[in-house]
Image 1 (cartoon, rainbow, N blue to C red):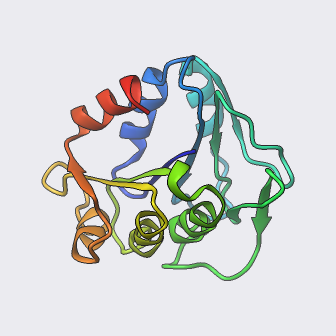
Image 2: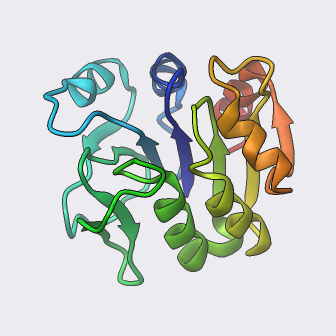
Amino acid sequence: MLLLGGSAGSFKLFFQIVKKIPPTINKTVLIIMHRKRNFFSEIEKLFAEHSRIRLKEVCDKDGIQINAIYIAPANYHTLIEKNGQFGLDVSEAVWYSKPSIDVTFESAADIYRERCTAILFSGANQDGAEGLLKIRNNGGLAIVQDPNEAEMAEMPQSAINNKAAEFILTTDQIIELIKHNC
């Protein structure tokens, strides 16, 4: 599983990455992006129009499929369940956000362990740092966008400060990694 988490400043990067994900990625890709509550958005439609593989918003109890991109919906935490499905949770916001990157990263770390790669991008709070650390501690690959390139450096910097980041990569390096090695 490939997890991409971000907030303020990550939309354009996610759009760029979605366009470059190869149809042969042989992974499930899940995008967890902070979104405004109760705000209509056509992010999924925009991303799907430019994706080379199937892309959809997560629905509760969706089966997790490879060679697909999923987007965590607004107003819910997205969980990875042991039975190979997504679960949606309505509990309180974490770091003022639903979906919370930490919640999703932590649930994926428990299920996918060393078969999980997570990348934390630009954002204006600490969401994702604890979840990324759990992924790293469970044997997964933990990457952050170089804070010097991030529009909002607090999110990747929090993960670095937390010793969660195994690698600190530029945006170009991340895109190349996804295109060729993930």
